[in-house]
Amino acid sequence: QVQLVESGGGLVQAGGSLRLSCAASGIIFSRNTMGWYRQAPGKQRELVARITSGLSTTYADSVKGRFAISRDNTKNTVNLQMNSLKPEDTGVYYCNAASPSGDRNYWGKGTLVTVSS
Image (cartoon, rainbow, N blue to C red; front, side, top):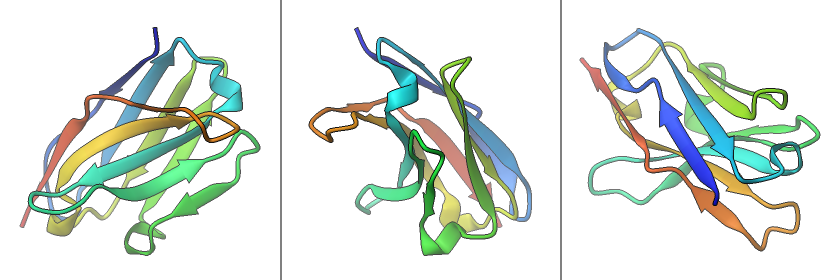
């Protein structure tokens, strides 16, 4: 059974930082592309950042220079360091695991990030 469990969300003032973590089980973690997505109220879910098995990273333009994604294959975890947070970063952040072939996608239940102005 695949499980992705997010942690680290919360309430922070604009300009502050948060670090999200996602613990994965039930998958061959090192082979999966891991990603963080977010969904703001009334908006569609969007990609925030992802990291491949080869450590190649992709970021949404809105978070470049402020967020950093990393993975630890020994602990089966993926982290998202979020700095200089803005109110528009508010939303539910979801962890995602995508199989190498892309035919399987797994999601966590999400963790809420609220950035106050």
